[in-house]
Image (cartoon, rainbow, N blue to C red; front, side):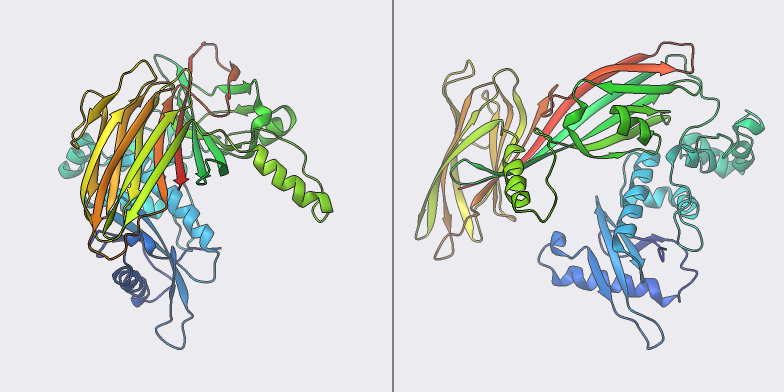
Length: 472
């Protein structure tokens, strides 16, 4: 499989940077840019465009192709492919965007223009002339393409030969040059005054709740984000107390799969810096699924799905009264947590086309060591809640900074519509965070570091985020 090339567009649809399309004509990338801009002009919203766009051939000799595109901030990445699986193109796009974040911290049109020379070098190193991914490890790329900094820009303007410094391994000799390390994802000769390694277990809950408050579907996907600052070539062994609840795992190339299959332990030589060690799905009730095709397979699968539903950490009661030219609503949110607060909760309610004249009162009821307080304006008050209405998207946004355990919050108000019949969305979109918490209760049992004489500092913490669709 091969990729034809890569194109970066700004928010006006004009190309900023593109890779060399050696095996195609000069009109080929322009066809894909025009196809995307045409699809964008026909769509009511940018997110409504199909991720894969069919691009017809411009003559009878060439064959049709596909344009895979991904949005990132105010820019759009296009990846033309012909005769290949689009998933292969999306995987490369995601990897290349992660590399840009590693180099620049922020990916935008301004960043691309200010560092176009570095971006061109990254394109040449990550994608060869035949369209095959080449070097995609950030640690290996840093030895070849120097990350941008004020010093390197000054040296480039002054005409200094930076490449000779890179190829010599920044003074480390032949042993410190590019590709000198036997481990592709780790540099050779790393030294730190303070050896540290941190693990962040981030889990995201995605759920749908029907109008009766019953969870229709819920799933928790997690990842272990790691930041390694260790000298030399350490060999790490990470064990968990309840690893059996992790399913559908995907690992960084540094992880030894045989050790995980045998012992459910992560054995690895870590890359330098930040990386995602593993991604997984939380299964509350891991069980053996019967053979497909049997009569009990379907019923057992449905029962397992019901068992795998993760409890929602809050409950919502909605009362909507629609009239001829508007309506009123009363939304009550109650925290189900007993020890930890819900933080940065945002509830969005689409009131439909033609809605306006919003009047709301946000209040905090009894519970959670609080008394009933009110807030009639959209400005956050002492209760830590606020509301705002987006007149363009017709979305009412309710924000609560911190929800103490077992506390009750309320938002009631009214709206009017210019249409004959109001048509608000029949669901409330809720996003939230819980610090120092994981839905899976995943805990690290031990971290052993061998191969080096030092004893590193180890840190582990958890964080949960959620996205719940609550229907009424």
